[in-house]
Length: 303
Image (cartoon, rainbow, N blue to C red; front, top):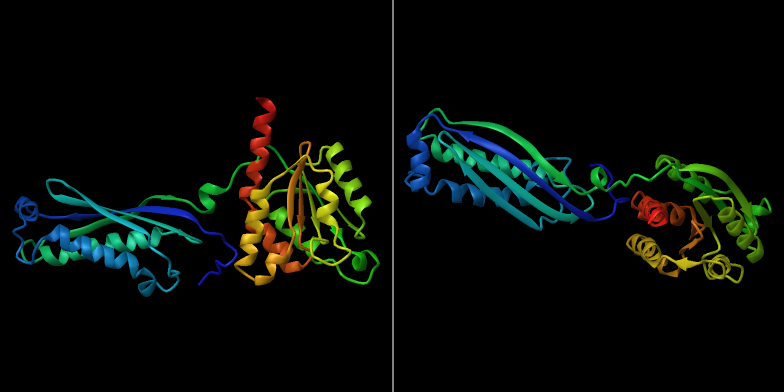
């Protein structure tokens, strides 16, 4: 199965359709009058569809087991056809399109099985996805323009040539995948003054985003959050909460990180962990939804 562990839970919905076509008007009458010998076709098929929605992962090899939190099955009965609609909701990392189509298929097959003794011309048609919502396809915001970013690696050892920068390189790679233009990447010691100077200069120069990696732990030299707190115009606690919550689901040590997010003028400042995994997971936690902040800021400047 596809690895979905980097993804975050979001509300996801899907609606699927199926059509059962009959060859005799009497068949539709029997369905509506509940006189089909095998029983109440619409209700039996509805129950079968509910079971199918919850058992999709057992039938389709690459489907992930997921919590089906809402299923609705409805019908539109025509002169010679019954249109089936299945709507499914979940709050999870992947969508429910296949679950909806699987349920619609089983509803249609159940109707076929119950109707074939009285109508040899029953067919199943148009099992398809009608609508899907949630996930990357409709939650990837469009930034109002190209977003520029600087990456600052805060580390005494790396700046002294005693270590290799992996966190900064990973952040750079991930940002480029989200269409962010990287202006530069610099490596500095854990120095309060230099951290503040870089953040202020970036804001004065109109850089959209500055990401500091390192110095967010609890050692005596970890001063990145303190240095930035002194010069921020405002904090953005929701971003910080999202980063820590995402990390906590992957390692209990995430609670020890002091990641920070805030604003200096029109520049967004992020302070992320210095570990490679911590830095990468922090980007995964907030992107691409994070890009919406620039659209909000752009709108505020035009109000």
